[in-house]
Length: 331
Figure (cartoon, helix red, strand yellow):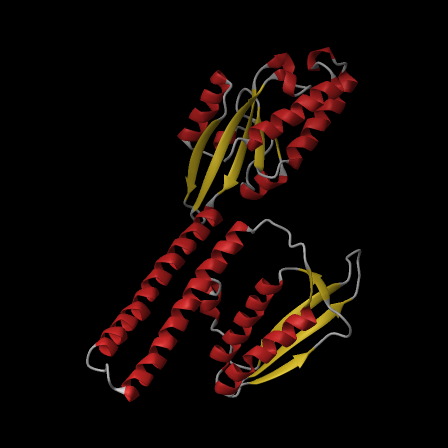
């Protein structure tokens, strides 16, 4: 984990101290009120977090921690549930040095998970209702399992794409050598090989576009789109573009648009790519004669939520087998 969590916690505890004064000088009522404040701050931390007293008993924990370790009980020693020597060595080292200590935990049951734990010492001045100013420990936990899985999927995708690029490249080299040699003066062979070369070049272009698309998505994963687009226009554009593909697959397309404009915040090119991929999958897996329905629907404002727009793609094909669904988004 980054150092941002340290800075965030120390910043909020510093603000707390300025607001409430020295902990040991507070009267009981002030101490109780301030204690409630640090619990609010603990609850606001995005990562799973627990505060331990000097005996390593659980003083308090936030919701993400209790979801990660549902059996842990407030007031009991943390070691009753987490029996990891590295974790408690990090807690001891952090208590003595006052510096954050980081350790990685590997849980194998009920499923394998990799957890990054960070131990941060909290002195008595950080929390008003801690007796005697003894050091307490804030332990944060971040589940890295999904992050590791995504990294592995990305590596697999790049490896697969690199492997697939070799085939069209080898074909192109073979065609070029043939045109430079035996078929140099054969007009019919030249036309046939040029058509094959164009097909292989198009295949490489698609693979490279996929790689670039992956890179763009990763770079802009947390950037809110600024532009506004009309989903009716996006749907109409993609449907018209793919009609020749549908004809070749003996598929039918039904397009149902919302009334007026269906404006949303988004990236035009990326939404075109998403809809194109969904429709092409429907042609591929729907079978001969499949009917693909593309529908744009306006959803009214309700339950405090603003008006929304739904874009859906459905077909009457057999679908994808249930056992393959977990791997649907992998490359």
